[in-house]
Image 1: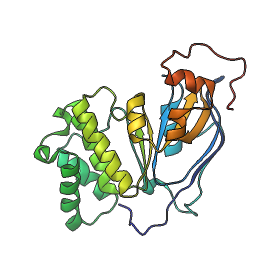
Image 2: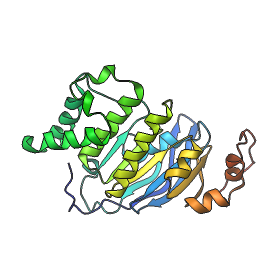
Image 3: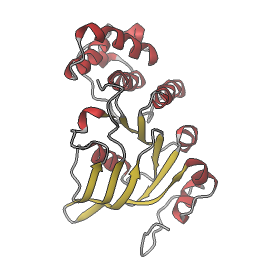
Length: 252
């Protein structure tokens, strides 16, 4: 768990980041800066590179070219200051409560503080009645809420979310969105991918639009949804299938 007084590791700076598998470039020359403590939503068609970009930023993968730099880290290892929740949450074969306690123990949170943090996180995620239940028997939506509660208990400065509400019902989606907003309000920078444009409109302060591995547009959410500058982004918001392609895909 990170002290609230710890200096921020932001901004996160990407410079001409590319990722290739064999001779195929899946991510192409992405450059941007992510800095304010708000919610950045990454949108784009399936296969555009949204999840790949999150994994690169989180440090699970190394870029084939370009650099990813936590400019505020100033020599510190940024890993303890950030967390990621995957589309399919990774949980231990333990109780709901123990999943969070284990994460806190790994971060060397004193034992005397863990119980209060676990209880607070489970209450926030609406899971307190499942505290002693095996995490593996929870519904998919409940498992995703547990993964978020575990991250919230650690108080990360930056949280990456990969399609956190994919394939879950509206009630569970509402709870997860409430937790995301609460984390933002407590100072966590949220960087999240979603296929749900309604969700993006509800949550986003900033939008990044990716198509075929390229960052086509990055702008404030109101401007993006009112009048995107990129014609592919315009077509995407109209609900068109982006099967067509230009000879050169370049941002405006």
